[in-house]
Length: 76
Image (tube, rainbow, N blue to C red; front, side, top):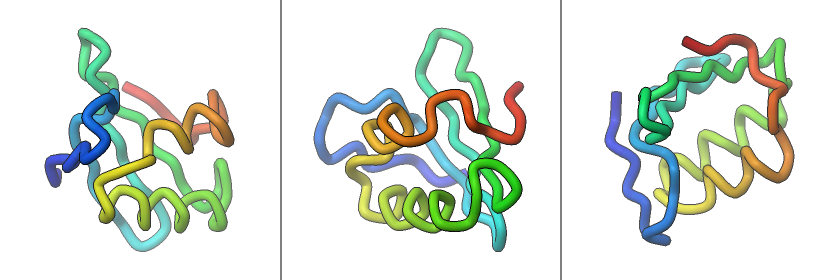
């Protein structure tokens, strides 16, 4: 897992891992809940946008809240 840069300073994202057809995101929510977003759910367009934001270190949490919400493949 790569540490999320959090350049905006107010993200709930702690870390992420990028795969070919998915992105795994860990949130600082007390439990460090892990979510998997894939080409299946929420779809390739959103996953690729999330990968860009993760690498940039800014905007990932806001994007997930605005466009994804509970549309993830799995969580643990």
